[in-house]
Amino acid sequence: MLRLPLLLLLAAAAQVTAANAADYPTKSIRFISPFLPGGSQDVIARIVGGKLAERVGQQVVVDNRSGAAGIIAAELTAKAPPDGYTILMVTAGPITIAPSLNRKLSFDPLRDLAPVSQLVETPMALVASPSFAAKSVVEAIALAKAKAGQINYASVGSGSISHLTMELFKTHTGTDMAHVPYKGAVPAFTDLIGGQVSLLFITTASAQPFVASGKVRMLAVAAKKRSGMMPDVPTMSEAGVKDFEVPVWAGVSTTAGTPTPVIEKLYREMHAVLQLPDIRERLAQLGSEVVASTPAQFAALLKNDLARWAKVIKTAHVQVD
Image (tube, rainbow, N blue to C red):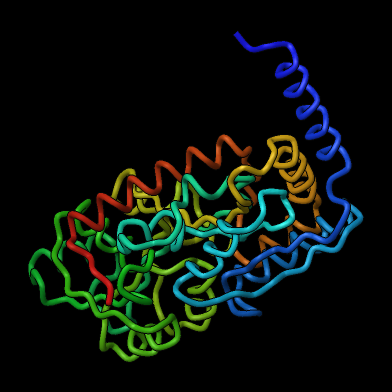
């Protein structure tokens, strides 16, 4: 049984934590972005961070720390003081994919980072070279089965969500295609347009300019519903591949050990930001749909995503240099 002085000490500590949370934030918040300035995910961080600053009355400073597929930024956040003054823009790469590809990570995404909220999601889409004979998903699957291992598909890098989505698609459809990894979307699209590769999984936001200009064809979106950017493109279920959905999400986490009231306040303020019509419109223009999940909902997504990609990586024997 706890002695009375210890109980009083714990009660006093809880009161201090609650008081600190009520005052939070009393100084600027560092918003680490694991992307180069100007990219779509970095723009989301700046849109949300700007409005968050207005609501809390403190600066929210976006700190770009790109490199190592987001691992550098995640490490910085994991090792920051657990006070809510360092937050991280998180995506699947360093959080739910890297643990299965890199056994020597200096942090555990589920243990060392505390989820705040999933902000948005953008569906992956299957796009095809204009010279590819198949004009639909069903035709592409039939051709891939008829020419097993002979059809090349591009990705934006080994171990990327672009790569893993196609590996998941291959398992889902019983097809076999050859992987050609590129260092980013630009060279992948260049060869897709030129016909050196036939297929590519990429976000709808990245594909939209190339589809609109007629340089590539979008066969389907891997989502429950059609994309607002390209409403004429069917979902995978409509195109003949049932239950194939791969949303690319972006959210915010902070350092594990941050007081729960601080995390809850961060969530409430971000949720309020994401309900603003002008913010929703700006995010929609980037091809992103607002989610604004609770910390618990985001934690569940991360756990499920980690298990999903671990299985894909193991089944496909995916390795990175």
